[in-house]
Length: 85
Image (cartoon, rainbow, N blue to C red; front, side, top):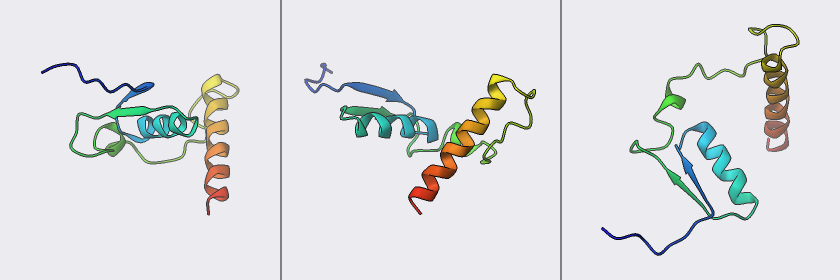
């Protein structure tokens, strides 16, 4: 099997929640993106086994970077969902 002639700007390994979000962001910025997934369909790896909750940072030490990022991520997700109905 030879090397294909096609070229892409970015390759994202994994078609789970994070991989697809990254691929979408890169594509929206105008990049040509290839997503590579080992499973038969997207979201069947780790994304299918997580707790599927929006973390608010309560499990981490108050003021820690992890707690701060959880709160920022939660707020960003709520804004994103609100803007899109």
